[in-house]
Length: 148
Image (cartoon, rainbow, N blue to C red; front, side, top):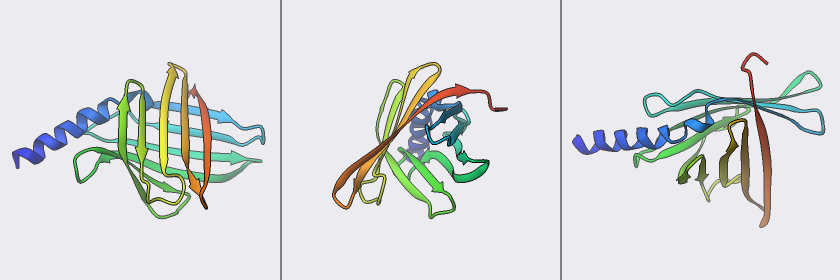
């Protein structure tokens, strides 16, 4: 019992290191697609997030996300994109203002990375392979107001 309480406390402190994700982030692609991602600040060892992509006045994609302790007590990124099945990515590394989650068995992506460049710039990146070919996509977000 005490071990599980300590594991939860450790996981909560690890999630607290990801507070740099909190807030509203946005980017507009050359195609005109606007992507918004919002994260609540850590509380009770959990972060909740959501994103949506809007183009030509239509919702194109959405995703519900959370960062929670896994069975091993370490944080994991859990995503439900556009109504698909839930996928979990255990934390691989947490550094100052950066985090990498990785699930090698997942189709694509296998890695999700976030890095805060400055107080108003957050770069998200997905990486992996499709049919043996390396693939990646960058999301250079700028801080926004949640009302935008």
